[in-house]
Image 1 (spheres, rainbow, N blue to C red):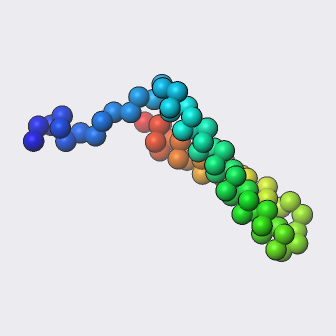
Image 2 (spheres, one colour; image 1 turned 90 degrees about the horizontal axis):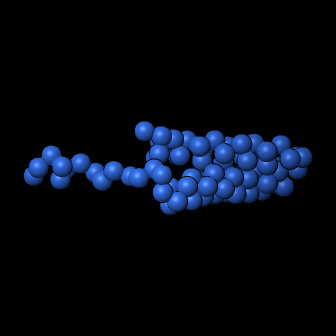
Length: 72
């Protein structure tokens, strides 16, 4: 097998698909972890502490996935 055949295909980072993927990582992370935080807030009976923590965790996770996938 040649060297080119073993390399994974290069991702084009400038396409609209990449932009939509980045937006979906950020919004999806915020939605999922924000919902988890909201549920914990309702269960524990706290103010929006866990909701805010969940939103921040979701944004951080979305940024991490974006950097891992498109940052190199």
